[in-house]
Image 1 (spheres, rainbow, N blue to C red):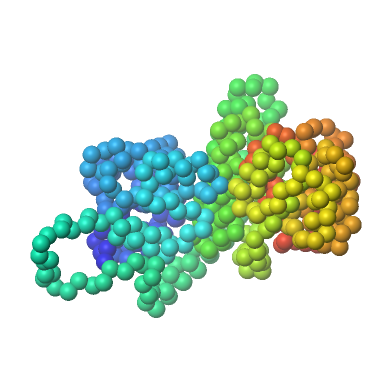
Image 2 (cartoon, rainbow, N blue to C red; image 1 turned 45 degrees about the horizontal axis):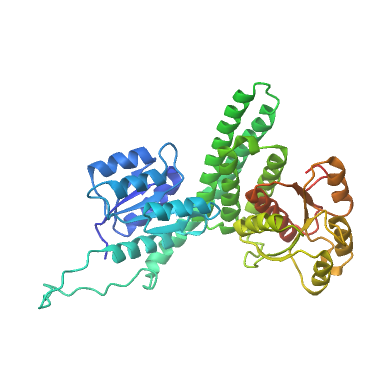
Length: 421
């Protein structure tokens, strides 16, 4: 149906670009590749494709700028554009819709077959409608029915080809992911060392560069995990990617707490890759968290973090009521404010640890203080981690996901956090 259509793929990762090129070529598209936004714009000036598949997170000229160029250039304004984005970056998704994207896809969870289906469906939806006439013209030859790829049956040969391609991507990903994680760890060590630099401006500049490099590496890992079928790894990696993007935009927020959170998450990501490669985990369970905090604004910040992580939640302001609920319902994560009336967070944690189902449930404390005594006591009463207000919602999202994944995959192990975490 779309044989001979010209598609421009704007993707900076050569392995992912090659995969989509092969998949779309097999579907009889004419494929052109651009490795960055500037190259894409130059290509669009020369020739108008039939559709663009655009990664928003590009070096130099980003995808939003490419999209704005398309919508402001005569002759390109109606060009269909399908974009890849990160579900944890809500502002980026909104910017893409505002700039004129036809479809937004979450890169971490889209398979190549789904991408092809969306591309074909978008071409069908945006095709010019025939002008109305008094007499309907008779086609010269029969026209096949126009069905969307999502509902069309897939020939056995295509299924076999998809399976072979996915197997190849899994092998490549399993082979390359340890090196990508090693690069992230190496740069993280450099970020920590740069804290000792007395020249503050130089420190910020070096830190921003290192954070940017880690971000690009994780962006590559997210894409590769997604196309290789490592869905849970891709989603967790995309959360880390979003965390690094926020730290890169404000390097002063890359404090010791944020860096420890990130380091713990990278360590867990490495183990999650192994577990998902063995397929010995259940990723279908929707996690549920309990929030106990008597401050409205604090609860809103916590909720924002959990929503970024895709974690369902129950939010309560009364700790006594929370203890009663813990006795009736099972939660995968508990987030406690420390300073609360009637029953403080430390006491509530001690009580919940005595409940049969909560001996190893992750507990994260939220506090308005940053003193060592509070951190030490949180560990002594059975807490897994602590985060000081004000905090970045994405950091809380990463902490929550890290502890929940660890509790689910490695239930017999001790908590990740130490008193100073």
